[in-house]
Image 1 (cartoon, helix red, strand yellow):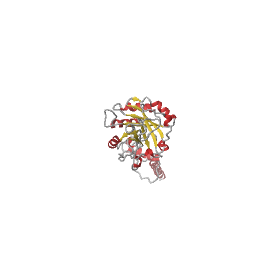
Image 2 (cartoon, helix red, strand yellow; image 1 turned 90 degrees about the horizontal axis):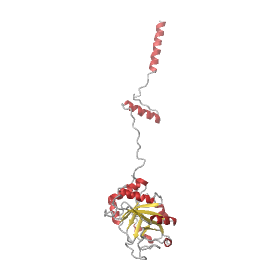
Image 3 (cartoon, one colour; image 1 turned 45 degrees about the vertical axis):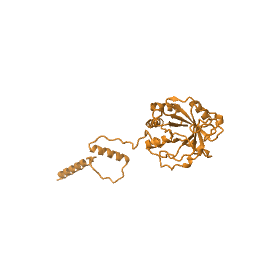
Image 4 (cartoon, one colour; image 1 turned 90 degrees about the vertical axis):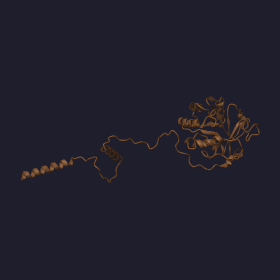
Length: 307
């Protein structure tokens, strides 16, 4: 009897020991009401994948691209057009004047300095694949005299990428230089850059620099841009340099842009004799293009950047 009892105890002990060594099945479903750590969740995910017969794990993808090729967010809601800004704003004390020149214009810098409303100079840097011969020299003078400085490229048809590279080589990624694409007449593809080419130009400059040039357009071109690129994110976030040679505008085509950034209101188109222009800049002739900003010099300086 004693030997039998001892044998039974030995068998029971061996059985209990064997049961304690059996591992839990990692694929068995289990309800866990406790708090899981991040590492536990990760391990559980791996185990689940293996149990389904898939030994590979899918890497976590970022929820959004880290460097979009162009802005994807549209402009925030915009205010209504301030029509008072289209009624001879250059006559108001709080506004600022900007001239835009090319190699054919003459400038007497000392005389121009007597007009404190003139705070900026925009100069043609290039036309197609040709450099403006006065661009670099006048840039140096303007900056030395404390003027805001801008560069515009007059787009020609064809070689759009080459034109954009040429323009950027002249601007030299200067953060203080306002970059402008001049769209003279997009309906005449034989002489000037078309809207599809303008899109390529804007996208290429943004891709290379992360910056958005200001768009120069006359009234008819602005209307056409509103129709053709109203949903394009780069044009939505650009600024408009509006050309309209009259003293009062009542039909500004607000759509992409609720208002102008600069308004070119005077040139040889509506000013043939010095002294008879809507605004006469000292030291310049009647052929000088004159622009107005509806705000102070400080306000203009705060917006003098490439979006």
